[in-house]
Amino acid sequence: MYKVGLVAHHDRQQNIRIMKTHKMKKGSIIIGVAIAVLAMFTMVHEADAQRNSTNISVKDGRYTFSTKRGSNRLDVEYDGRVEFGEDDKTIKSISRGGYFRVRSTSFGNRREILAEADSDGTINYEYYEGRRRADFDEDGKKWLADILPDVIRTTGIGAEERTERFYKKGGVDGVLEEVDAIRSDYVSHIYLQVLLSMENLKDDDLVKIARYVPRELDSDHYITEVFKDYGDLFLKNEKTTEAFLSAIGRMDSDHYVSIILKRTLKEDLSDAMVGKVLDAAGGMSDHYKSSIMTDLINRRDIDESKVKQVIDYTDDMSDHYKSGILNKMLKNDQISSKYFNDVLRSADDMSDHYRNGILNYLLDNEDLGSQHFDLILEMVEDMSDHYSSSTLNKLMKKQTLKTTDYDKVLKSISGLSDHYTTGIVKSMLSREQLTGQHMDEIIELTRSMSDHYKSAIIKEVMSSKNELKDTNYQRILEVSDDLSDHYKVNLLKEMMKTKPTKATLLKVLEGIEDVDSDYYRSNLLVELCDEVGEDAELEKAFRKAMNTIKSDTYYGKVSRCLR
Picture 1 (cartoon, rainbow, N blue to C red):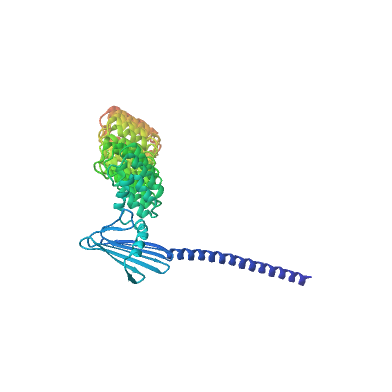
Picture 2: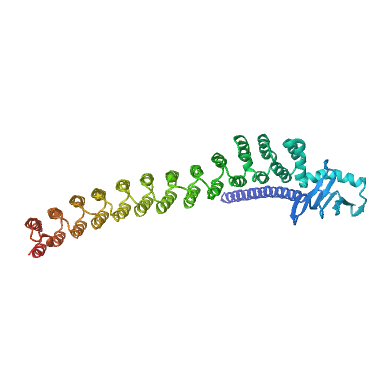
């Protein structure tokens, strides 16, 4: 039975291996078929590309056109000015020294005509059937008449004269009807450019052209070529402007739309028209929108009303691009103090990093006033401690503040960490315009701080050039009451260097009993010894404080200094 079990197990394993092999083969076949189909499509596409191609080149005034469609090929080459007859079936004239050559090949059959002008304007023809030159007889003339309309519509040759001809006969509709018969966007755009250069086009004509261009031309490139030099033609009234901007709105590429709008903004547009152009850029990516706005603000003649428009139009842009625009305008000196608050409001919804960049530039380079400070202080309230302190420190160092401004700054820092609060207070204390009330408020800020930062700020308060009053010293003694012996005694020693009044000295002596360590009590009393002098009241308070020392060693040290 054991052997039978082994055999059965072996058979199952063999079957599993066979099934896996079949699955792998099946998967390989599917993948192979997919690769073969893909290769077939690729070959068909490549073969199609080889059968169909068009090449255009212009060099030294010579135009060369070549197009291939399967077994059919058309080659056109000309130099100089070539005009055609009214029916587009004959050559009317060729400028002196110019020529016109057309060659057509179909299923191996080739025909060619070379037309050149004599000095008197007479056109001479050379006609070829295959490689053999033939007489330019009725057969040759018929072939030229048959092929010329297609050559003209395929290459764009003679477009200027033909557009003028169709316009004289049928106006804008006449030209657009001819453009309908042209299959190439390249050639169509030439006719449309010539049409827009016509004088005295009416508003209805412009509306018609604006609607026609994006409807009939597929390529954004050629739509751009039509519109880019004629934006000012459309932006003259509400009707034509709406048609023009609607046409641009149907384009897919932000790149090409930006080319048109940037070219248009170079014109002398009214504020209303500038607004419409910026509206048209509203749906674009920030990159292109920023590019358009940058072009506008790079114009040194931009007036204040347009500046306000640009600031407003940055509202929905990313912080990166918005800050780029605002900083550029500030550096270009295009924003007067009248609009500083508009810049600040625009920057208010940025990240701290970008907001701080705008604030730093204004604080470093502009003379701001209280109306600006109010907004800046509002902005720093929801910034991180790092960026808030950076802004407020710069405010202290770079701007001239009034008494009321200091009050607002002190209120704005109440929520910052001890570290950043200390830095800002140090900047504030470097100024000499603080009042006793300010000093009290600064001291009060330290009440909930750690011993380290509390003592650091109070030392700065006492060493500043701002005059301290007894009330300020009293406040220092109150807030330092809960300091450790180490910080408290060191702080009171610093206070002695400021030569406080008798009233303050009595308060210090009175508070010595709150120092727990005999070591620190004796240290402080030795420091105060010289301050007592001949004053009986001070000596009495001193002896009372000295009697709180329990250690004979430290007591003796203090008593010796008093003798």
